[in-house]
Image 1: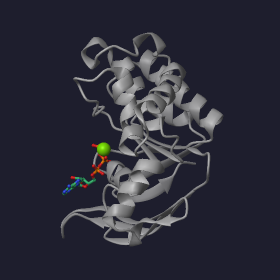
Image 2: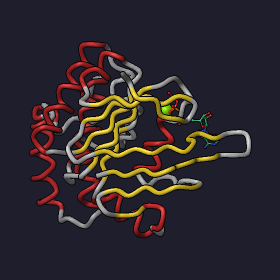
Image 3: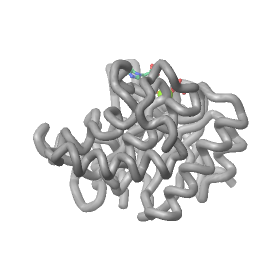
Image 4: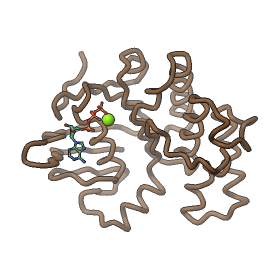
Length: 220
Ligand SMILES: Nc1ncnc2c1ncn2[C@@H]1O[C@H](COP(=O)(O)OP(=O)(O)OP(=O)(O)O)[C@@H](O)[C@H]1O
Ligand SMILES: [Mg+2]
C-alpha cells in the first residue's frame, strides 16, 4: 500500500529530518512509529499524507506516486485516500460532532443528507451515538479524539495516519482509543500508521518501526 524509497527531507542545510528512509507497508497493516522527540515521526506522516514533499526519494501510496503529483492531485489524494488524526484534533469548535464528521464528505461534493447518514454510521462505530448533536466544548478529551477519528474515517480512506492520537489522554482512555483503532483496522482493512511515545501502545501494533535521527532502526 505504501512504498517509501530513499526518502530524505531536509528543512535546511543544518536540519535533515528524514535521512534516506526506505519502508514498505502492506495493505491492512497496523504500524506503530516510535522514537525520541525530533527524530522525524511527524515529518514522515506529513510526507505520506501529501501535506509536505520530500527533498529527494520516492513515495507511492495505493499506486499514486506522490513525488510526481501536482497540488490538485495531492488535494484529491488527501480527500479520497487518506484520513488524518493529529494530536490537537483540528476540530471546528462551533460545529457539532455530526457537522465535523460530515466535513470531508461535503468537501468531496456529497449532498448533505447522504453525508449525514454516512457520518451517523461512523459516529455510532466510535461510540458517540448519544453525543452526535453535542458541540465540541461539551465533549471530554477522549470524546474529542473519537470525533477526530470518526472524521478521519468517514470517507473510508485506504490509509489512516494518526500522530499521537492518545498523547493527551489518560491511560484508560488511551487504551480505549487504541482498541477502537484496532477494531476499525480489522473490520475495514484500513492501513494504519500510528505515531506514539507509548511502548505499551506500540506493542499492540502488528509492526513497530523506530526512528532515530531521521533513520529507521527496526525493533528486535
Ligand atoms: N517546518 C520545519 N522547519 C524546519 N525544521 C523543522 C520543521 N519541522 C520539523 N523540523 C525539524 O525536523 C526534525 C524532525 O521533526 P518532527 O516534527 O518530524 O519530529 P517528531 O519525531 O515528530 O518529534 P515529536 O515527537 O517531538 O513530535 C526536528 O529536528 C525539527 O526541529
Ligand atoms: Mg511529532
